[in-house]
Length: 77
Image (cartoon, rainbow, N blue to C red; front, side):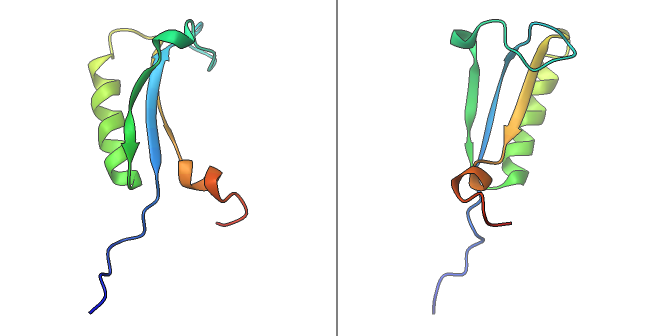
């Protein structure tokens, strides 16, 4: 019987301090926090939420979820 595990859809979670709260430019790229790569959106969202909540006191600190699987094969939905 074949293994029917869910399709792997890679997501990257990372963040850092921004130059302003209204943009997405980082103050210092050498200080980016690469949280990790996750096999699905649910796992990435959980990691993102944890990091975002831990930095809530710094309005310029932001974390992002990047859909890496979309960048790997951009012609597919």
